[in-house]
Length: 545
Image 1 (tube, helix red, strand yellow):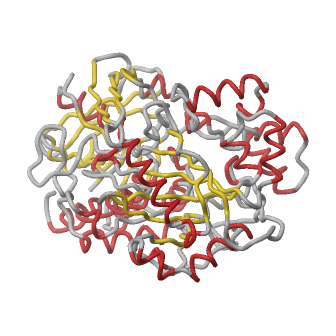
Image 2: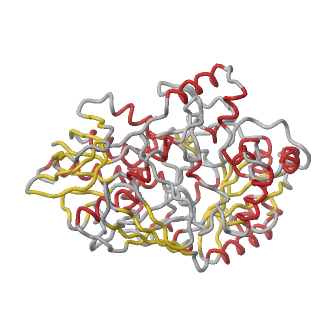
Image 3: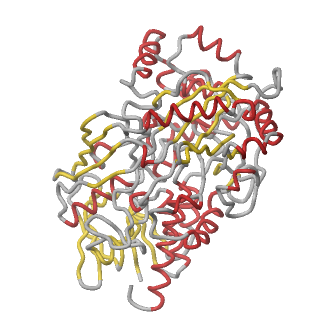
């Protein structure tokens, strides 16, 4: 049986892995933009330690290169909620924006209401080229509203964990976020983070009494050299695009899939729509700007990303103008002062991803907080708007300041919806964005909870939490446009992933998620993609799907 997976991001490769393991022939249809040769050459120079000043300048974010007045005005506009303090759509990998190339052509979007930057990608590996590598499963309480039980996803978390090279120490976070796959101590912590982690260990009882669950961040990072490639070299370029390629990208798995019999990667193809015929599904694809052509399969698995999968489904089913709800996490930025551990710790390591995490109960909701040490990379990315004098002051305070990213559940975040309007070469997604009614209040309540627990935390919030974007939500965690439901209606999916009204089409990316908790969803959407694909392969082996 020959099937197609649309998209090469984390969900796509997880689904393809399960389909191949089930004995099926798999073609992956993808636009598949790749980094330019200049980026590959830059990575080589960085690995060899012979980069130039121009190379280092190329790695800096655009805002870091702006004038002092421009940066100051951006800061003021961000605090006032008129501009994004955090814009993932401008995040380059090794100086290249290939991750976002052609998105206005292949994933056209028009935004109504308060605008936040929206992360879209047609690249090989999708947004995994620029993500922050955070990997958390659902907590037991997060399954409320899912047509699945924890036992349904558990074996697929285990399978996906093998792909991700997870760093996941066995610590207090395991009380809420189960460990799937082997525990891994991973990399050493920056000294500042290590002081806070040790403080947490000594105050576990009080933290638990306050309902705070604290531990080391779970990250998809290769800690040591191995057959799969280089491990982290602590070079400090995590946020600029690791030149050692130690941060998981879906391209890792795609490269392994391409060596397996029965798999074919077909880049250069944009799926426009599908139609169903007896015994088959026909995908209409565009090859660049050429006229469309048709490809036939026994089943089609949509893993093109939430917005693209919604657009393909709506175009194919004639659901023009039908509004679909979207899910995303509101994100706040909160500077924190370290009070744990006394004086100045040892010199910092060169590692710039988040290192600590905590789950905080606030008025019956579980909020997720990820904490970064204030490395030069983080200052460049998150505080590039500051004038040089303030930047130098921040540099001197690296041992005392940390930056917390506060994530809210989608249910308490921005109100988002989308509809698809006819267009060429593909339909346009019209998004409506509005702030969540409870978001700001919950962020303030979280600040109070952290201040009240500051003694046990060894951290004290500095000032109010700032919205990351004008609409509040991240723009990078979009999900839920084709959600799973026990009795699926139009533009919904069954628990087995089958799209309502399309018996041979399955939704395996974030569009299928019915709820979005506060923690990063990549691990969960990969596990769900693997579950749906493995179930299909099992049924296909027993007879017609």
